[in-house]
Image (tube, helix red, strand yellow):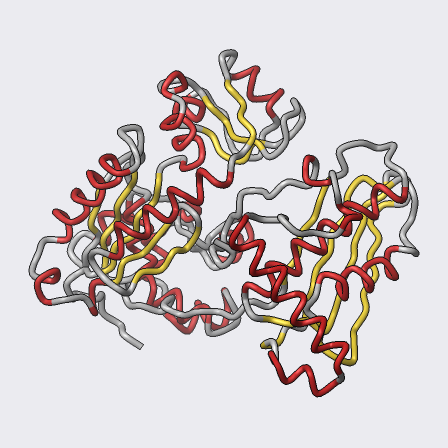
Length: 410
């Protein structure tokens, strides 16, 4: 446990694309620049907003608000359906720019990345990270477009670097060191700290901690035993002082997708086709991580009977779309009527055994060869170039959405 503040040179940089999806659309469509723009996943007045441009935010538009509500605040609002290929393109351009400075980069989400300069070349280390931050900003404008802006934060650990990146949006660049740490935290609220939302704020308030500076000054025993009741309290004690505790990678535990039905009067057959589409998507994502599953969970929400779910655990691991759908269809046969939302989740994931699966028989080996061939074709020629005939036509409804919080499928 380090009781002091980390006084080492700040070598962690956090880059955050400002209102990423809305800004990308403004870059792609010059007529939208300077106008309030929101991105949605379905083009209806009642759908929730995924992200909003800064022009919309200034008028009070927030994520999670419906388009209809947003139009009351911003009469000239432009609502666009999300276009994931554009955002993936910018994501990869951002990665390319970051890799010029260090091989040790981490994409935290589709619009946020971290560069670790601790293990870069001596020539890069000799440069000012502030200069590099401005250089990255310019590269983003030069290589993607003049409408693109990003915030840059520099600190001794990932947490404080992200905090620095959020201090002066849009297009800011800030550095947090042991010298200005207290002054910086004094300007913030508890909920401005990543990881402190309503529940954790209430926990801290119970022991008299209402401000980030009080959080910083709390002793690790109180945080461990009383506030968080786990080692997480000690992690917060170190994190706030600039010591690294977040440089960890986690393995994927589940893979799933859900879909809100586009109409209330769909037949059971039509709903099953959309469930089949979700199974294909989940299977593809699972195999991208070289995983096989042992469990399937199917859920539904009914207008008359509320929430429903059913699950099944298999004796052997499975990975193909057909295997996932066979189990999902069996479970869904018991689902209620009047369904408005469905979802499929594969869990109890394990590393795909590859050709070892052939030990269970020729049929499973053939299934794997066919699945690998389909995946190869789809990767080369486009998503769903080959798919089940049962899901023909469902793609205009069950679309690929913007991936939040994870980059493992990009």
